[in-house]
Length: 243
Image (cartoon, rainbow, N blue to C red; front, side, top):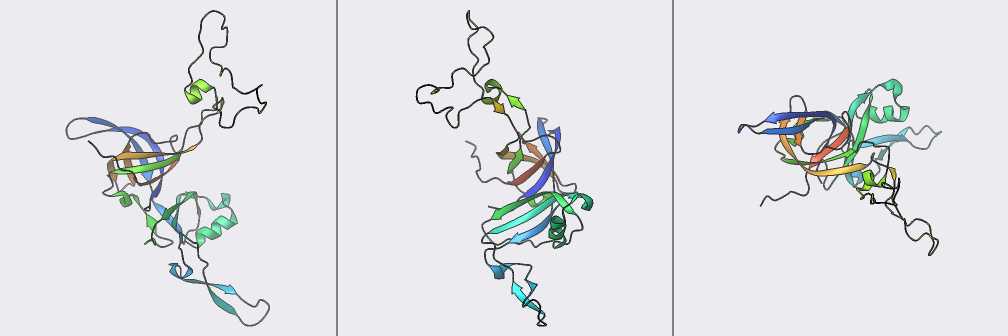
């Protein structure tokens, strides 16, 4: 579990290598991301130090120092793509203000870590984080395809087009156990329904090129989502071994 980066899928292009081969790639704008919050296992490990809280309310004892509560796990919360303050909730503005931001971010996600993070709230994470990384895992939301039948959604075969099967070629057919035990449609039955708009992870996408100055990453493979859709990039966990 390592720190990743947030980004936006911009579109596709092609890159020519030195040997003359042409490679189709997807361009992803990776960062810059602002560290909004750092979570620690123990309260004393927080890089923010201590925060003040009013104790003995109503008395003249003043403010007392109280350690920040423990989160119970290591994580870093990143924010990407600035959002206008007029469209942001006050709670989000207050959360961003702790990280030194005037405006909130449209895309906020958290990366869990196995050890104490080295970054602090308010710091920036850029595409240079992926310098030297050959493969990445990309998390995104797939394209929405609306209401789809079983053939498009689950790759079912159509029914025979022989004599007697009229206007019934692309239907799902029998659903099973409708009359035997009267329990309705079995749970998990593959049927027609809403297709797409699901969180998926595509593993081991090759990093063909990294432009750290412009925060652009060129990936070879299927990046989930539509253009201008938000994605999460992190170093691949399962590395393919070429035989």
